View (cartoon, rainbow, N blue to C red):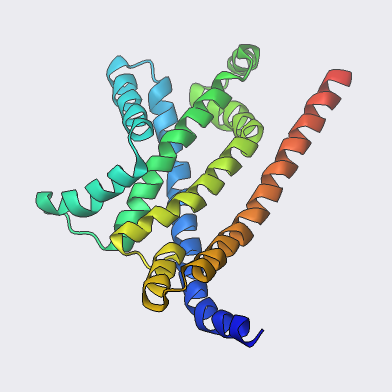
Length: 224
């Protein structure tokens, strides 16, 4: 029991420091991804063929290549072009861009699922395209896709662990340092896994709640 207590006292403070960085990295990257994803979705829906293809390539490239490779390209490749980034900055940019590609497709699916009759009705009462999108289409699309957006937030949290390869001091990196210096790999990575689960669990509950609320809303809509 004393040995177990010693492990917790020795490991947890360092891992909690890493957890704070993980949370910070995830929140910043996800907020940026929400914005970039929406821009990419609009680009993908654009009637301008050039813009459509550009954003189509953007989404395809980010979804079709490993995040690990993208992160290494940003951190080690961009300095060759004169753009120096800290490890944390590179992780934020890489994670945000990667997640934005998935969010773009979620936004696009939500927008395309809105009945065209609503758009035509909005135009009939004099609303322009911008107001129609802002007041009619987008609020419904985002509401309908909230569970999927929540799943991307969970994915963002998990993928943040890959930032350890560029020495961002998040949980995984701190765990690797502790394991290599103490040789207590089992105990360290058990704690790392538990901390990730604790961070993930509230998000998972939120996604489940949003899914159930959406299903109830759909059933009520049918009955009504």
